Amino acid sequence: MLISRKRKETKEITVYLNKPLKQVNTMKYLGIIIHNKFKFSEHIRYAAEKCTKLIHSLSKSAKISWGLKHGALKTIYKAAILPFLLYGAPVWIEALQYEHNRLKYIRVQRLIIIRIAKAYRKVSNEALCIPTGLIPIDIKIAEAFQVYHLTKGNKKAEALVECDMEVKYWQHPAETITFITGNNEEISTIQIFTDGSKSGQGVGAGVAIFKSGPTLQVYNTS
Image (cartoon, rainbow, N blue to C red):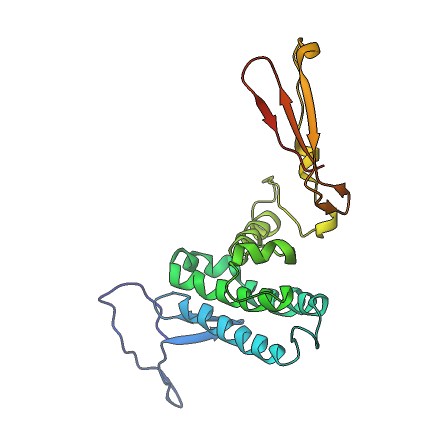
């Protein structure tokens, strides 16, 4: 295979090894499919199709009321499908600048998280990532690229990299809100109300602070 991005490069070469070798346009090297124009659309297509076939095979044993549960499907996704999709990401990440390549990986993730969440097909991909606790695939690819350069590239660089964390360990939104009161607390009125929704940490509530001037409303979910 002759690799070159020049438009006017010679397309055919003749190499003999006892007999003429066949010239090809794509070649798999160390698990990554390389195009003769040094593009990786073929690799993304190959990885997406292979994972799609695996997901369709799992669908036969992952029905709504019976078969593989969401925990088993999530383990299969993290241990088998996701590593295959992320393999060699620092090499071909530039190919995701094109929308058609990025959509192929998004469709693969959507197929599996629909079955993990046991949700309808009309639910958006972003909404499905919340109940399943999974990070969108394009963010995971960017994370793999960043981790590679921090560990294998410039080791002196420092950056914050998110790691997977179960939903029960996520920080509650109420803990990120800070209440600041003024000097005229005696004329302020605080009203607390709830809609009855309940989480693992208690019943959701809202806080409204009324002052003599403009009304300040702060909604909380503690």
